[in-house]
Image 1 (cartoon, rainbow, N blue to C red):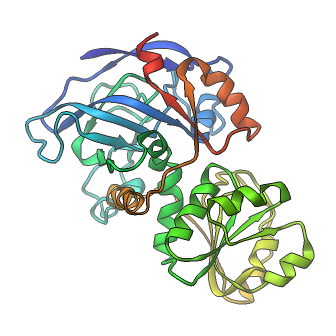
Image 2 (image 1 turned 90 degrees about the vertical axis):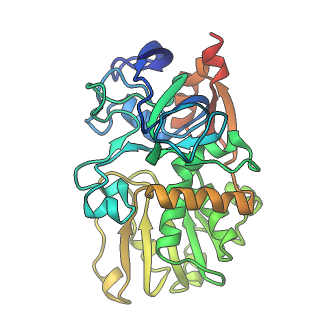
Length: 350
């Protein structure tokens, strides 16, 4: 067991504050990681504030982890001390159910062990995330990070990246497809980058004309202002795929009209009730509304390799651990382009 520094929230009403936790010793199948950077995800804020009514306190958030291997167990062959690695949203699963055998551990039928706020099968209690100095993870849930990409910007790839890459791959987005990315934030900016690298004609769909310049810098070919009925009519029935990253409940009906026959709009942002959907919007055209979570470990590694090939990382703003509560306030106001990443040296040196 190792005592490590961390930051934790002890209730939904409290700020994150310094905390100490215990990490297990390195077992035969484990990789011990020195955390260099940890991305700040909107899920972290939801868990700290108990918005989903399932938080276990104290909460140590963080599931966008980049670090260096400190130690490996005797059964670990694919990683060695000094390797640059990542840990995303999961640290374990049953490895036996049909979902796990299909490399879809995120849908483990016996319940995946998430990086924080899940029951801890090793120490009891619950798991603690990457707002900490170190983490110990089963080798099957450790990812190789390409050395040629910026390791700081790579951190949000472990959640925001795979959340947008997975549906684009699953629905086979390819060169020449017309893809709409709805909403420009932490998820949306990654959706634009991936769809562009896949060769699609990318349209950023937003309510805010002020985001047009940024969207085009990120790789959007066009910008569609969804409040402009004339523009929406011009694009009606023309999209092969829509990636909907809006993080709150909203009216989906206007977007359904943008889809071609037999095309799909995939939701990745709104984990909450949505406004009523008119059945005619999907019946007329045999259209689909679908959802997607993160990806399995194999697909997440594929995504990282893709990022290495195309030099894709997130646009980030670096912060010290001591500024996390201010970052949360800014995140609630969408005052970041486009993800915060914590420099963990600031925790280690405190």
